[in-house]
Image (tube, rainbow, N blue to C red; front, side, top):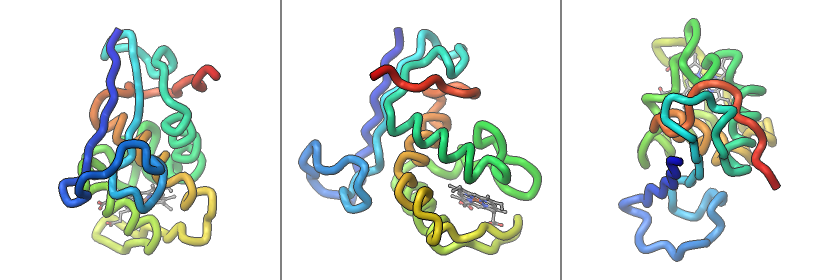
Length: 147
Ligand code: HEC
């Protein structure tokens, strides 16, 4: 059983007291996820994942997958997100791009500022994307966490 808990503290975030609003936008920390898979090569549905990361997958599937592809691997004009989200820079860039939209060489990324579900779950979407990007959550549909 592989248990992975990722806590990437921001270098500039200072000494954040543990437990301060982990999903909050102002916590100064990159959101953490908890994923536990029987082995690295397993399907996502065999892993145990925390509720935030599961919600992130659900909201990603609903709002982002049509352009960024299944499992965030990229599709058509929209880039894969897995190599872009890691670390402090990737976290802040995701917030910035999703809030403001972005017109770049690949195409146009719409702003999501008006879409409350996306704004409220952006940290959860980040949890899902970073778990995928770190290789801790395999591709596929995860199963809902047990209560
Ligand atoms: C209508 C298609 C579309 C949808 C839906 C969409 N995106 Fe994008 N996104 C794009 C395109 C195209 C780009 C590339 C823009 C460029 O740089 O040329 C992009 C770029 C990005 C980037 C920046 C990557 C980088 O560092 O350059 C992030 C982060 C991102 N999208 C996240 C999201 C998230 C999160 C969602 C869901 C809430 C989402 N996108 C939904 C089309 C889309």
